[in-house]
Image (cartoon, rainbow, N blue to C red; front, side, top):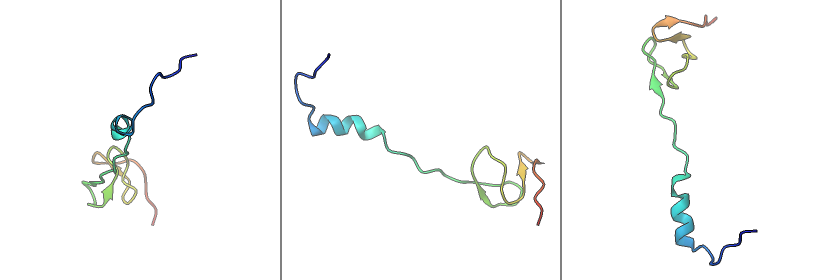
Length: 59
């Protein structure tokens, strides 16, 4: 079984983990109603996607 010859230092370990952080999602503005929504998804407020009504929202 492979065993490390030397202990990994805190600096080396933390440099490797520097890319593990999660990025916050940036909401896009709906082109139909102007409400914030996630990109590439149907607007939960009006039901439009790329200018077409995909989901009928009942009020």
